[in-house]
Image 1 (cartoon, rainbow, N blue to C red):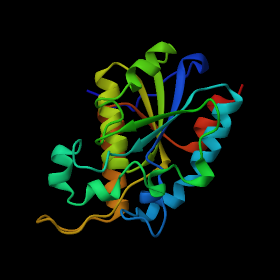
Image 2 (image 1 turned 180 degrees about the vertical axis):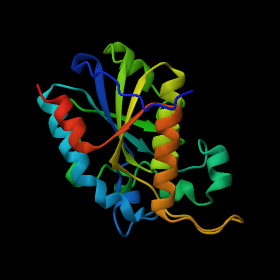
Image 3 (image 1 turned 120 degrees about the vertical axis):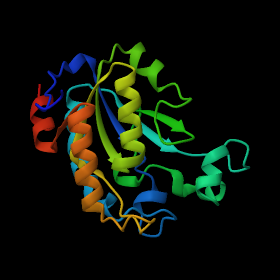
Length: 211
């Protein structure tokens, strides 16, 4: 089951681009949760966004933000002590980085946890526009990107993950050995391609979005 990689037919009128968590806190070298490879995906994301704008495709940005007073972090606070100070919605560092700054008409969806669908109106936004296919870019590949992918598939969306427009992170040894970002990226993309949808590259997406 699922041995042959899927390749979706893209209907421009029913497709949206989702940019996951490309915020200063994750992308800037001085960010509190800096993802070293995030800077590498900025240009690919820009190419995809540009192709999407030319095709009049909705551009949707996800931001991981919290109130900052501890009232909405729950288990996130248990897993990541200090998250209330790091992702406080009033901080400049939680904004989308300048090169990818949303334009008028773009949509920004704030989320409290990993998935863009968890307790947000993302599903309503997509269905109101009759979207059935979403193109996933951003960071972190194996956390917020993958969580969004899984929830999207459970809601019957066709998902396309752009491999070179998503950034993973390295992990220290948590009892099973340390992992490089390359290790994490390879495994996550393989699992998503096998179980959840299409995985492709920026150039392929740009060509398929050309109108």
